[in-house]
Image (cartoon, rainbow, N blue to C red):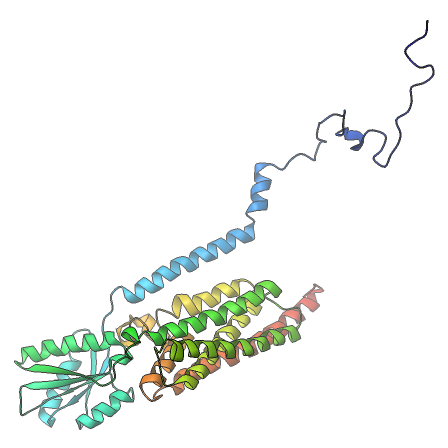
Length: 382
């Protein structure tokens, strides 16, 4: 009787590229093999998954973002929650005896809201307000019981409002009345005189964001000094286009700030270059943390101290002190004074912006060279 089993040794499985033990090697994870996972090669545990998903670097960056977020709240609410007048520059036009008494009375008010000084004539008071040497002026009329308060609300309606309220209380106490004359009001499409502030904020955002994007996509610390130079050079055409676009929008398109297109164009380009160059410098110095520093300087500290919502004389001491030295404040003053006050008192703000641009370029190049030198000394790649 024939056997169902072939005679001779059983056939040897063919040895393919995957070995004699099955498609998956000795583990036998292929068809017909065992599904056991080799020791030491198991699926990652919870701790390993957590470390992979949220690294220590990510935790540190999250902590930095939290600090910026809380700093943003502290800075904006701290600057705006309780505005109080401080040393508003006020001129007093009156006969000598009256001027001395009124000036002393204004300067002796609790909280020092005014810094008053006598001005010989009403014409001089007007000129000084429009030249931004004074914020307001009281013109006393000896012949009548009605005096005149001269203001320029384009420089900041909040200051004009506060000055008017205090002056009215003083005049009422003397059984006198006061008439308000606004020498320079905001344009009809410049609501509350805030367009200067908002266009500057737009330029600032463009400047530091484009620098941050170049850093994220190309490395916050370029591999060579030449590449740092190329990155800085790339900011120039961007700044020109940004300044041009902002001036077009704010002047002919929206008509918010009219009649000073070329001045707005130039100031806008300088603001963008200042913000961008400074951000590049921060990144070369500190890596990705430099982006956070740029946001701290330009947004957290710079915006509330810029004199937009509340002019400098209504801000608390800290914000009042730093505002003129940061690009948002310098830019807002330069735009506002160029549009409404014949470019008076714009030299200082323009110098501030120029220093940020020049210092950003020089610091970025120097820091890049220093970083590469240190990397070469350690034998590490740049």
